[in-house]
Image (cartoon, rainbow, N blue to C red; front, side):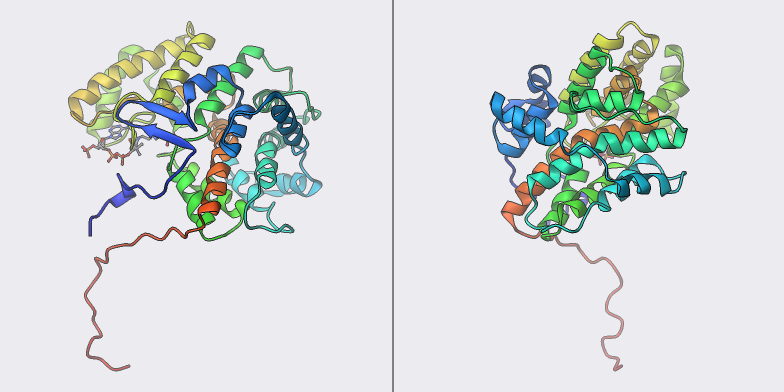
Length: 369
Ligand code: ACO
């Protein structure tokens, strides 16, 4: 049997949702390139595309938006839960618990888009309510006139969101909403394939998302830039890191063996927002030096920046707190997970690969009980 530890190179499903071309550095969502969508369409319209297979007409977009907004409020039960979870619990653990707590009282299979929308629309409020509760801040008044990105910034910052920041976060949401069979999406599909409910699927996906090799990387990128601090320190710092057998966060990808198109698009978004700031200049210089060092110490591995490297720059430029970088990623990717959960449910075939046994030989062959 051919082994592919980590399922590298294995095609585990068919999908209409996205195509990730790791050789050409292309990402397509249902027939449209992701970077084109990010500059021409809102996050809401792209979610509609993924869930319905076509971009919405104006009327469809209005209806979808109205349904979205009507799902934003948290119940008193969720408010209580957000207040009572241990203070030291990280936001990703809070999200996982609160998503899970919304299950029940509903016919749960097959999953319905109303359930997905209810989960997606509440994520900004869940994050912001918990964030303000822990800080002892007042929680902003709910509003129905803002997009997902604008509402996210408004709820967290408590002020009218800066339009340039809204555009940048909306582009970030579009560029991170969907990405083939990444680890968290695969987790969601495995659970969906058992005919389990959408809440369980998303709970599993959040568990996969928080790991530092997947969605947990952007805050670590920010930590790396803090440690490097000066462009002149970059070479030695990176070299030491790689020679110690550690990975550079925000570099490398299982599929992309060339530039990650999302990293390029987010680099441009960050440049437009904060191109003159020292921090962005440091990020550019660290990327340049790291590519040289990786080429020297890891030749032939084709390591480039991935989405998380410049995600960190964009999220920093829109002034989000670092501990919320991965939860912010969740606020977009949850829509991609739901699209896959719907698609998997239609396929209705359990995902059940094999393992190769490498343990001890049978020891009780000739023994009676
Ligand atoms: N820094 C240094 N070396 C690296 C890096 C890196 N970031 N990524 C891969 N390599 C090296 C490995 O050490 C390995 O070298 P070797 O052949 O000498 O053993 C070689 O490149 C192949 O690496 P693998 O770990 O086998 O690649 P894999 O496809 O399993 O891993 C992954 C992909 C997990 C993304 C990896 O590149 C990594 O850990 N990157 C850092 C974490 C990160 O940025 N994650 C976010 C990914 S994007 C996302 O999930 C949204």
